[in-house]
Image (cartoon, rainbow, N blue to C red; front, top):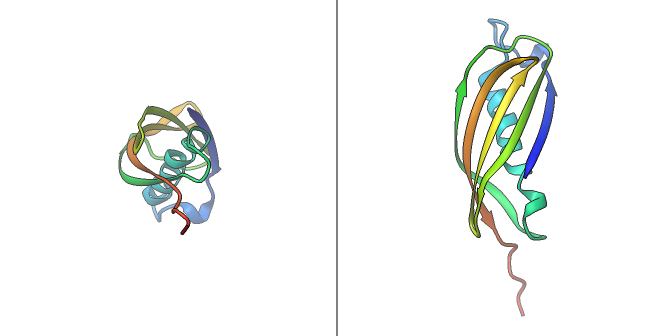
Length: 109
């Protein structure tokens, strides 16, 4: 599985120092972690992030950030996903996370 998600950097997403807020970057990463799994799961299943780690490599001040997520491993109950976030030609963040794959609730008989 592979997914590409993009987000424009807007002024209201910047810190007082003019860089994209780390929490905004983390939100984009979390979104990319989960969404890459949906085409690979059975209908009705859902993915919940249980943990992820980010390495912020360069500040982002303008333009567009692009998150590319790749499934590293997908088991019956867990998945591991890697995400790279770029801003132009600059690698801004790398991340990896673990997600719980849950079955839909069973309907009463």
